[in-house]
Structure formats: structure tokens, C-alpha cells
Image 1: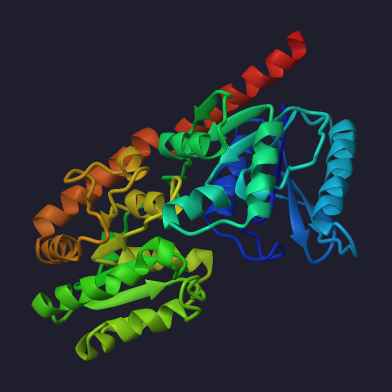
Image 2: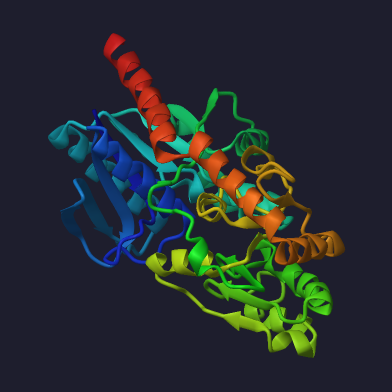
Length: 383
């Protein structure tokens, strides 16, 4: 079996910046090859063309082509020709692509196309309550209607996406996974009074709600240090730096307790998670967040949001606490409770790790993906 992933990102130093989407693909790709599946990853939008192999995964970096007219269409048709040639030469069985911005719109591929919902632009716009560019909506709709099979990382994302685009096809749900042997608890590194957020500094991740929440936490726990790790972005509504908006919204006393680590290398994130007393992830918009899986796998006590997908991953009062990010007082109370109560904090962390190991480990999820791929290939053989 030979699977090809088409993606705009992948966490590799030669392939530009990557977020949760790229991480989820890497986790699956590296595990698939361990199970004897041949994997090719085609990364579009790169600075230069390149073909190389690493950890038994073959990579095709595809340079972003520039066109004077209809560039969005012509680049996709270029990718179509490239992929179809690759399928013939390398005997690829199927192609998988994400739903984000409809990168497979206009393509006619010679192998079955699976689109996995990690959250389309339309999906996130709906959850954010902001308008979407009509072009992006149309690209995503054309891509989804052109797919042979649909796959989602959460039931919530599947149902929301179905409603947004009026999809009729069956949507299989297979969540993201994580290597629980790589993300492991390191209790000896935990530091007292350290609250940690990691991920992009952007409104949809709920980080602006952390300012009033931290004001409340600091009032009762003045020794607490609040750590942010992630890229700062310009806020879509105000045009201001999200980091600056956070700083402007906290009390003067809290300003001295806030620390921004900016973007950390992926390898350093584990170190910061390990140091944390409590991890906070108050997002308004996710599909199946890798940050949550990583913190849970490392046995950390979490306070997350309670929206949609959260109920498929977290169990309130068992793997941590789930609270709506707008409920600042309750959110602050849960953080303070975990900061001051180790006998509560540690069991929650252990349960969080157990839940990830039982339901979201790479071993468990990879087999579900293999079974899904095999069913598609077997259907093709019969036809």
C-alpha cells in the first residue's frame, strides 16, 4: 500500500513553518511507515523544488509557481499533472489532502482522493463569527464535492462542515493521534505557580480571554507566572498585535508576571510543558487540537474550553476541567484550584494521559487509518 499526502505544511526545517495540521500528518506518516505502508508527502507552496527521503518517508517539495493570470487555477492544474505522474511512476494507491482552502479544487486525479477535515477556512470563520472570502468558500466547496471520500478528525467538525457546505456523502471520523512514547510525563521538571499556554497568539485560540482570567488568578495567587509560547499575529478585527492586546488588558501587577517566549522550536515545547503547573487551552475554534493531545499525553492538569470538539477529547473533572472561555471567574477558579491542590492536580494529569493512551495513541489510530485506506483500495480493485 502506497499513500500520498498533499499538504501546504509539514514540520521539517527545509519545508517552512508548520502548525497542528502538519504535525498531525507527520505523526500519521511516520507511524504508517513503521507498519509497512509506503508514504510520499507532497508539500506545496515551497521556495524551491526538491525531492528527498527522511525516516523512510519520501518528500516532494513543490515550488510555488507564479502566473500572470488565474494563478490559483493554474498552480492547482500544475499540481494535478505532477500528482498524476507521480501516481503512475510510484504506483500510489490513494491521495489524501486537507480541507483547508480547498487545495484540490479543479483537480482531476487518477487515484481516489480522500479529504480529511482538520478545519476548513469556512469552518473556522463560522466558529469565529467572521465573514469568509467568497473565493475561499467556493474553492473549499469544489474540493469537497470533488473528493471521493471524506474523513474528519472529530464528529463535531464533521457535522459542522456538512452543514456549512450541504454535504451528502458519508463522513468517516478518525481523530488525530500522538506518540505517547515520545510525549511522556516529566514530573521532576514541574515548577510551582507556572501557568502555560502554547499555540498561536490569535483571537480564535481564546488568548484574549486569558487577560481578564489572569487578573482574577493573580488577585488570589500573586506568585503565579503566566507563560505564553507561540507566534504573535495581527488581530483580524482590530489590526493590532494580539500580544499587545493581551498586555494592554491585564493589570499593571500582572504585567510583571507575564512572559512571552515567542516561537519555540518544536523540540523545546515539551520542555515548557513539563515545567508547567497548569496548562490552559481556552480555544474557541479547533477540530482535534494537537496541543491538547500533547499536554494530556505529558500528564498535565489542564483547563480547556468546553466547546464542540472538547467533549470528544476531554472529560470534565476527570482529565482536567472544561470551561467556556467567556466565563472568566469560573475559568480563573479552576486554574487557582489546580495551582494550590497537588492531590487533585496529579490524578487529573494521570487520567488525561490514560485517556490519550487508550483512545488517541498513534498505535490505536494508525490501525484505524490503515483499515480505512484498505477499504478504499479494495473497493477500487473490485471495480
